[in-house]
Image (cartoon, rainbow over all chains, first blue to last red; front, top):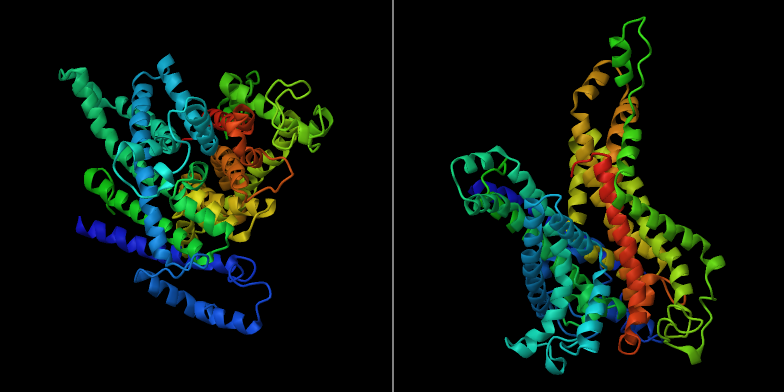
Length: 317
Length: 298
């Protein structure tokens, strides 16, 4: 078992380095001077050279990458060009907000999706299954940023039940565990949950249908198990894969929250990315993408390992 | 294959056996029996025709602004679907917007299909070090959630139609490479390819005659399932201000510029999203229909 975990980790390491390299190269893909956002147009060549030296943009690429990676490993992601604050602090603050939203959305999407999937898989090709399948197609086809707008129109501007934007009363970004703050999470989390809902419903439906068609189910029935007993066996067989899909969805939501955060002005990583792109704050952009992508790789790794631990059918070679 | 078996089995003086229907006629037959896929296909066709004919059939000039007629509700005289924040006719803009929205949704998938299949088939057929090298690079791109990669790329490249299409293509290539590689590897290990190789067929002949004909179907079906994602992402990039620039009509961009109108004319503001939703859903349903008609397993 330990050697299985070790192999998975060793396999993930070069991918992490590759991810870091890609994030690093992004800056050099960008057209124009990386300092364009802070340099006044009439800056002297001398000032420009000084700043290039300060940010280290004048050194060879390999040296820049090595230095950047080394500092990143020590938790230093550089300084935001627009705000002058350390990138790491800004990113970690925002990651907390996005993670809170993404976790709630994944949970919501998993519960609804698994329910639809079980209904569809148990009563295949019945009208119930058609409704469940239709809901899952809607889930994967709906442009979620538009769904967010529609929910705001219905629940904020028309019914006035829930706040349209922000993470807390008065636009505060600090999290307090009370109803006033939770109210702000409802609309963005419901919007976000639609994507994992559709995907989990599809996965679970296929899993349940496949499990039910296996002979051991007939065996269980023959042994006199009640419907509930058979159901629990089906759950046990589907759980590892469904949970793995849920884990990956959390990663997708965390990385893909930018559109939803823009709609709801949610102070998370997506909002930060948006600001970084439009202020051409390349260190902030680089740092945010690096943290999100590495998080995704680590999440993949954890899901792989957990799946290997829980599901003895997975090949460990 | 079926032909030669049939002719071998048939006695010399028997009446000619009716030719068994080929794979493609079976696919068409199955598609015809699938009302959902047919309806989705018809809707897509109608959208494409509408996009092509938009300049001639739209009721008004989609660029004609009027400060007096800003944000008219749906059903206003002369504005069947209302007017946008600059007083332009929504119906005409939605019709013309189909052009850029469909273009930006479909082109990245076509480009990624061509590039991704080529790389994936090469990796799968060559095997060994070539395969390892290609697939490790693909793994790195795969390590990014697709929305994040698309936004990171187009965010650094800058706004614009070309950059958005390029970014989306880069997002889809690794996904198609993975599918192409795994299908090709399966085919390469099959007995009929071994037989062809043993009979002395050159590698290119094997790829052309055996590999391509067996792998392109599954890759194609997988690619069609990406069009819906691509539509949502392409419009999403424009929604963020990273794709099409004003005043060109595009559904995602229209959604963006109408965002502030959700307090005054909410249902007009939501219209462009309805178009994105309908289009993306039709592509999803058509792709599902194709998948089962072509008997491609997930």
